[in-house]
Image (cartoon, rainbow, N blue to C red):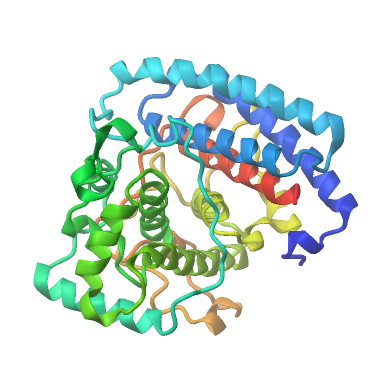
Length: 386
């Protein structure tokens, strides 16, 4: 399986670009048609659309002569027009959404044109893993416990991240944003090592949004408190290092999902993994032709992503209630025929954990699954253009 898109044949990149662009056009058409019916997953869908537009814009700026020719560019412009129209409808739905919070910035990040800056994947701090685990243990003893990862806890911590606003900066604190009051319990939950599945992707999402949304000074203050004298590295380098290492762990999780044959219960997670890590860190491993075409094959006739006959999942298929994870699954076991069960793949480390809200729409479609897949393809288009 080819994993390095930079070495991929130009013809393969061109063909894949056309396939992805056509898939995105069907996706955008469905999202626009259903936008007035999206409420429970409103924040997630709006964020994924904005993130997708950002990735497509960066692709256009970085590689104006991208693969795929006129057809691809026309399809993407049509898709973006759909998404622009959908944004207007989704924003008007806020007043009807029972889940919307006044200070919840999850969907509003990028609203001021902030772009996600992709990190180099190379680790930069020697011995960081051991220091990271030691620091967590020390801080855990201070706090007494760590917040369990649940939808509510994730929302609470995400609400502490606000878009950068130049007019709301406290000059006395050298540019520290007044909109990033990241507290110690949230920092501890977000930086807990050795997590998996949605817990891990949400840790990454928290750091990704904060680092790119004006909270870097606040994160640096937390780094200095969290690591103390254990770490000699510049505090500004630590959050990017955490993101690199989280994405390396996310890739391991994704490989296990692929090894298990992409069970229905893990498909939403699989696309979320590539979407977030592909945007956060330069990791073409998430965008092999095999993985891209596999995700394309899941698209339903209406253009969305969901399950006509889901295997082993209920309506709220992203809820997780057991304390099973990858903790006891070694690399050799993942590569054997006796790997962990399908259900283990989407569980996180703490009991009672749940992923973000899902909403079932028309044609057996799932709002979050559809939105993160749109994001995956937007990021894939950027890699395919390079």
